[in-house]
Image (cartoon, rainbow, N blue to C red; front, side, top):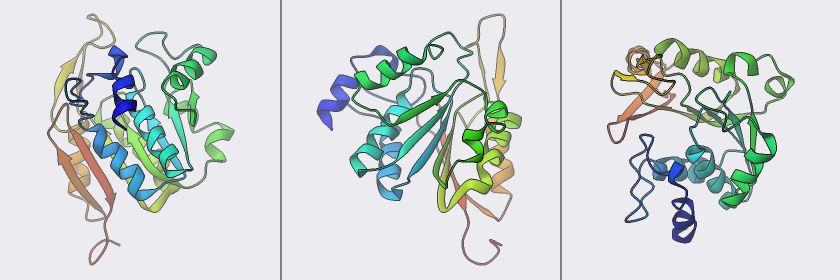
Length: 215
């Protein structure tokens, strides 16, 4: 695993973007949670919504490969720049990191839910939400896959613990991250268990609750 991480971090796009990675000691930061959950749950299908240069799809794809099965469905419309717009380049990018089980869809979640790929999607074991970081969009991404989640499925929300202004789409297009507001809504709902981590730009784990009051 260390050799794979060392090669991964040669790519500058794999360090940063709020996952608390550290190149000096080959530390995946929050990536260890992503990898560990995928190894533990052993999902056949993982859905990732949004990624700047593919750190999360790659870490989850690596975990599924190490499991011996599984596929990552990666949804990103490439609105930050043109990085994800060339299908052959996308395949080569992931292959360069020795991960070949990632299937990219160049669209938003709003568009993806109207595709045959969505309709034919099997049970989702892990959903990672890291698209447009507002409460409204995070809720849409979550609810779009709610009926497809496995009974023990886990949803991870990135940039989810605090409000902050981002200019990732340009200095003339700032907006405020408000995913944390949706996390507060889920915490108030007894149907869910919610756990947040403050490291990096923050991560929140959500799963269906079990026991009294969960129905």
